[in-house]
Amino acid sequence: MPQDAPEVLSVGQLTAILRGVVEQCFPDVWVAGEVSNCQKAGSGHIYFTLKDEEAQLKAVMWKTAASRLKFDLRDGMEVIANGALEVYPPRGQYQIICQRLQPQGIGGLELALRQLQEKLSAEGLFEPERKRPLPEFPRQIALITSPTGAAVRDMLQILTRRWPLAKVLLLPVAVQGDGAKEQIAAALNTVRCLPDVDVVICGRGGGSLEDLWAFNEEIVARAIAACPVPVVSAVGHEIDVTIADLVADRRALTPSEAAELVVPSVDEIRVQLHRQRDRLTAALRQRARHARATLDALSQRRCFARPLLAIHEQATRLDELEIRLKRAAKALTQKARASINALAGQLDALSPLGVLSRGYSLTKRVTDGHVLRRAADANRGERLSTLLDDGEIISVVESIDADE
Image (cartoon, rainbow, N blue to C red; front, side, top):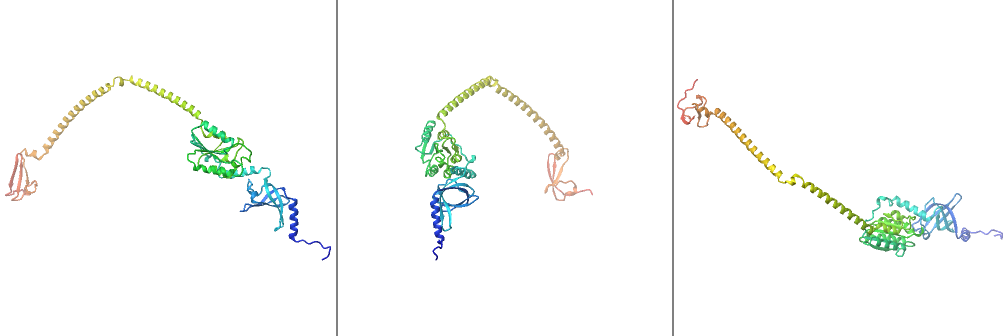
């Protein structure tokens, strides 16, 4: 081979040289672009492309870095990526290994908050219809908060002062940092196993968005929604609004306000009872006065002054009615007797026996009682019964002389 011939490199050799140059010169870069072809592998790694109008850049976010990502990476997002460039020899392409991703124009936490809020809102977790009323007189209250913060001291002081009749159960949890969201969700899930808990206060004192972030996690939001008793969210200060506030049955602006919301004031209840007692006493006295006046008015009535007068009047009227009834009955009986006599006379006039008294007789066969109307109705040797006015004659027919 000629001495001035160029050095020929293999593809692998050239790629290795380029890899060394690229990785040495670009150990930490920031690059802005639009996300496309975003793919989330089952391993937890995220593969995507950053692009603009002039070029494209392959990007990878390994599982460890991806687990710290607060928002959901989607196609079309404008982001700023930070990481190291490397060359991937099997494909002969360079790519950025992202350690951090930040949405352009909005913080990552704020974007994550918006995304989760849209998701849970679409599921109806923020709807007023699913909000439960707080118990009027709670017997036992569960506090889910840090046991060392100022918030728990404020709440305990207010609860015991306003309503010492209630028992307070503290479920200590971390309220920020690693593991906080899991501890808060676990405490909320534990409530269903605790007897006589009527209401839950879940929250913490103020802090930055990062400090309050555990109360923006989906696992906490779903645990609040699944809690069997009403939950009051008390996170931060008035200006701080978290996902927990939106899902909870009631939002308190501060932990101290939450304590005031869940219990009544024993002093106020005592004042109300005294007012009720005074109103009842006044009402009873008024009713007693009205009843006395009514009784006095009734006592002046004739029926109460002479109570037997009405009875005597009714007795007299009853006697008069009795006399009238007897008279009417007597007259009716006489009239009926006259009618009966008249009818009896008519019957006697029409009776066959009446005819007999005037000299007539009635003849009939003894065998069948048939009345003989003509001589031809009789037969020789037949026994006949003849009825007269004063008796009966039995005879035997010897001969019959009938007109032709």
